[in-house]
Image 1 (cartoon, rainbow, N blue to C red):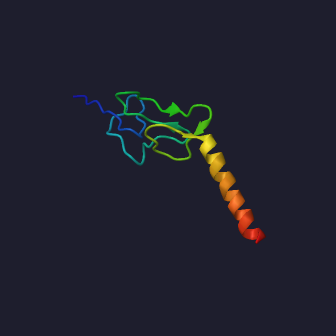
Image 2: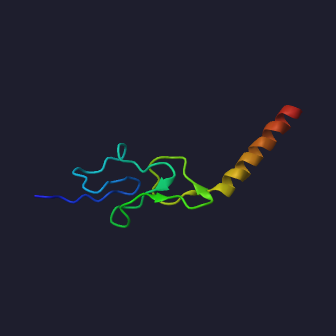
Image 3: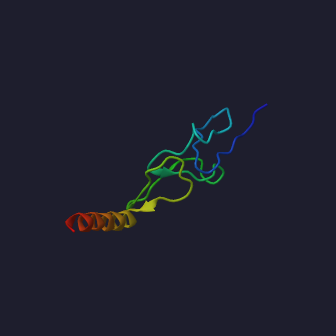
Length: 84
């Protein structure tokens, strides 16, 4: 008897997997996001201009623009704090 497994969002299930997906061992790789297996069974690379620093991402990647703003603010706060 064969049993089909559907990956939960945030996990990868290679074709022919013979066990239920594990949320830790089979988590989605960095730089990608993983939809539910019945929607798309393959990890989706982050589009240009976005990134993913974490494992197990389920939906979309983060815009690089947001990180640049955060880094600029933190840099300004650091220099302001150390110049006074």
